[in-house]
Image: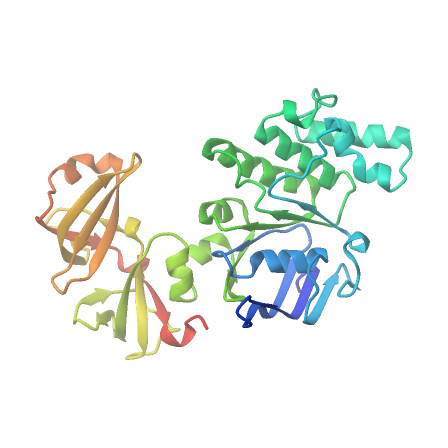
Length: 365
């Protein structure tokens, strides 16, 4: 049985457009979030992830459904009476207050005594690595340091749930990647639930215990990062999470036969009935170059373009029936890639165990 600290039941919210239409931001969402879990709400712009976060915080009122936090119904409670805190994308620091004053603002507003306030602020600033910057103003800090102040202010009040609304999007790539690991470590240290919103797939896969992929106001898949990537529930998830090569057709014994007649070998899949319409997924990194004596199955392509991206080569190809395919070849195999050229025929091998079949009946609504 799950130890859920947040439960949403049939959560629904619609907004009116300037043209007079109704757009369903949340379309009957059921979701249980575990105690001490790091869960990420992931999806494209307009999928409903931020609305879902704001519904939990109380800044958006549901049209229908319930929200329960730690066993108490919070559906009609205002934000200030919910045991949650939010870290926003723009940090929202008070520019005239020092780091220590910003971090301790919630405690002061709650009437916590000065001695306890000082102790708790110093402890939380040490936790986020800002113990020597208590007297600085926000304008004297880097973007990463400002983000840490916002985190300190959010966790100093010891909320049961911390909501993070794309807090890393304003940082440069290297700092963002460093902060991803810091946030994950901090969540373990604090032992509280983090609900993180992002549109960045790598961010979600790196940090999360589970990922909820949203589209059209609905959860398309809720699972571990590895399951989401290796075994997507539908073609939306397969296409949104990482790069993908998708083939429509039917399972036929050990083979998956595309509409053009290409046979793709796959591992047994009890979830797909024989002759059932389905989609086969091969991730680009699961193609590999091999010698002509390789016993692994292969797909014949004509190479169209080779792009070097540092850690790997992106090789674009086209099958005889006109299907575009993409392979990611590790940079360590540069000698093999060097033998390829645009217009040249090549065999892209794959392991049948890496082929994932998606039932058409499981497609996103």
